[in-house]
Image 1 (cartoon, helix red, strand yellow):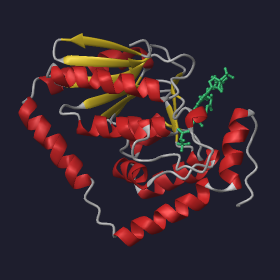
Image 2 (image 1 turned 45 degrees about the vertical axis):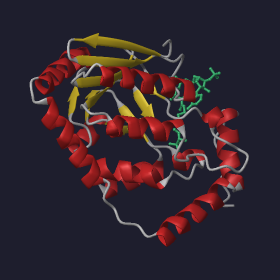
Image 3 (image 1 turned 180 degrees about the vertical axis):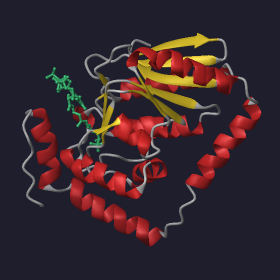
Amino acid sequence: MSLVIVEVNGAMGTITLNRAKVNALNGELIDEIASALATMKARNLRVIVLRAKRGAKVFSAGHEVTELPTNGRDPITYNDPLRQIVRAIQLHPCPVIAMVEGSVWGGACELVMSCDLIVAAQDTTLAITPAKLGVPYNLSGILNLMKVVNMPIIKEMLFTARPVSAQRLMECGVINHVVPREELESFTQQLAMQIVETSPLVLRILKEELRVLASAHPITPEAYERIQSLRREVYDSEDYQEGIRAFLEKRKPEFHGR
Ligand code: LCV
């Protein structure tokens, strides 16, 4: 369990991302988060905090770019580790609080937003980056973002791929609380304890009802297949290859729309 630090304090569990440099979400790290969640479920913990190490400059740099396929395969399929951990958090039977400090990038924004509550330090920023990297984000990922961020803001975040402050996201109703870094742990602990005092059976059904209702978006098979074919045109494009190549070569991508 070297890529995460797992702590249990009474009915509260804490999962700390602990992967060197920037907590890039590779399969191994995500497997360890999933394993920690399963252990906490087995112990009937009543609230979980997902965090980075104290003082982190980067909460998570998002998807491990080197694990994005460049051989014509869909880069974000149902069984992609990021998709798996988002579902695991959404299906987890007790509330998960994202306690965020530092910058959050790409798929890590969806990871944070898939948590039930978000408490962020004042200097936290979130940047949703598919457009910068050339990645055709997938439908369930976009729906997860839409559940949390209203349309004008999610369009700005997706279309610019630029970091947005936690303060602004709190004003938009995305982040529950923004506090000074030095108060982040105590504030989150207090919020977690308020949750622990309530009925775990009722919280479990409330969380599942909210998940089911928020996901109730009818879409015809033809609409789904059309989106998938449009996404394939993107991940089969030169721009997709350019986005990943530019990242690895540490330079700005030059997209040509083909
Ligand atoms: C692998 C990395 C990464 C990384 N993967 O330190 O949302 S989608 O669709 O885009 C989805 C597919 C997704 O989530 O894609 C990833 C999106 N992430 C980003 O765009 C963030 C990319 N990273 C950065 O902008 C910077 O690394 C930040 C701002 C996170 C940290 O900057 P800082 O100057 O502190 P470095 O950039 O030097 O990064 C430290 C090491 O981590 C690697 C990076 O290549 C570098 O490796 P080396 O030390 O070997 O040079 N790294 C950073 N992000 N997502 N590897």
